[in-house]
Image (cartoon, rainbow, N blue to C red; front, side):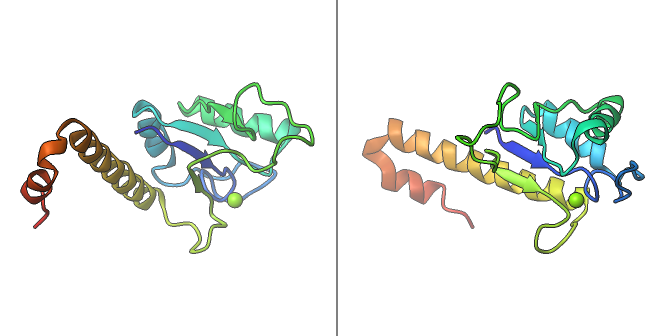
Amino acid sequence: MKLTIAVDFDGTIVEHEYPKIGKQKLFAFQTLKELNKQGHLLIMWTYRSGKELDEAVEYCRQNGVEFYAVNKSYPDEKYDDSISRKINADIFIDDRNIGGFLGWSKYWELLNQITGQTFQAEILENKLKTDKSSIFGFLKRNKTK
Ligand SMILES: [Mg+2]
């Protein structure tokens, strides 16, 4: 189950020092690299533009994280009035979310819960598709404690 994850920069990957680049947040790059390895698509979704944006992208690259797209849903997306400004992501990680910045170890835990649950749901769905005659038996066998 691959997610598209939009990640804010200032206050999320690094401490908020805009337009400078703040100190990196604990486990930010480790988590992002691991998510990349798992095959999720990472999008940088930031207020930054121009030179400040390039600096942020380069800073992440130096720390081993390449984004699939930056401030857009797809690498070659061109904005005009026919395209919504809201990018197409499954999940947003942003220090301005309600609840504030939760910390990267918490984000890691939450994302694994989400991908784990979806994975379980996919297994169940496939099982039901291929084993229609014993749906109830299957559900009973796999009932959680
Ligand atoms: Mg922010």
